[in-house]
Amino acid sequence: MASFFSNLTGGNVNVEINLKDAESIPTSTYKTDEGESETLYLFTGADTVAGSVGIDLKGKKSLDHIGIKIELIGHIELLYDQGNPYEFTMLVQELEGQSDSPLTSNKNYPFEFANVDKAFESYVGNNVRLRYFLRCKISRTYSANIIKELTFAVQNVEVEPEMNNSIKMEVGIEDCLHIEFEYNKSKYHLQDVVIGKIYFLLVRIKIKHMELVIIKRESTGSGPNMYNESENITKFEIMDGAPVRGESIPVRLFLSPYNLCPTFKGVHNRFSVKYYLNLVLVDEEDRRYFKQQEITLYRKKLGCDEKGPQTDD
Image (cartoon, rainbow, N blue to C red; front, top):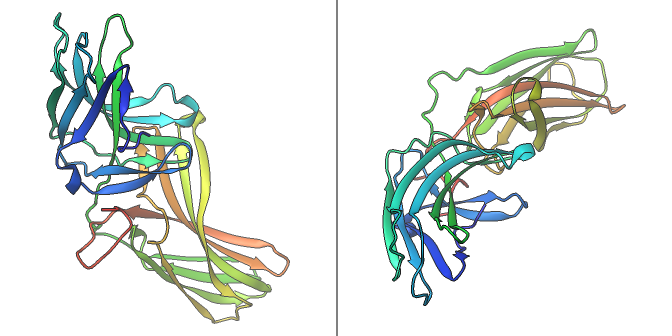
């Protein structure tokens, strides 16, 4: 991804894409393909994307072209097929039509993309990237086209779900272990707290410790070509030492410190991102007993008394 601080130069011509009221647009930090961090301007799905394209001839007398346009593009790139991104949004505005007349002076062209459907959030994963960007293209006949891109990010808040049932399950090994676990709900916003309890009904094995793991599972492709990759976001120790029958262990796990995105399901049949709470018990012989439960994460609009890491404005 191109940082919005950089300028692209084609030949001896400088092209800049400047967003309207850029100083008041929030920003967010995203990971690049190289694993580094970059800061991007941040929009919601309903925001208008407007600004101007500046072309500086840098002392040249003229610039021949066969058209100048700006595009707003949303596409999905898969790691194994980066050369063929899937474009789900493509809007074009012509800034200068095909003409026999070259540019003979510096120009500044305003643009505005209103009512653009940006339903999907920007995402950078291990095997897939969903990216939005503006691209200015100066087409030329006898020379290489001049292209400038500006990547921006999209995040969308969701309404708090009306139905949010708690999770209650009983698991165990016959005549050895029987536990009940409960989480206060099944859907959490990104700044939420997982609250629950683990109740031991039967304990006949020597448990050394117990932990709760947040697992992120990224799925790319579909059908027989689907590829799943799981990542442990964090391990949270709930208990250290052997429990006894009738003991109840509280669970309180804050989500805000971790780099989480919302749950994505079947984004254009290209990828999904799901989350699981994995309860793990380890006995004194280092045997592991676990139970996974899927949860849903969503982005909630924060109130004035709340603070989250979603933006860096």
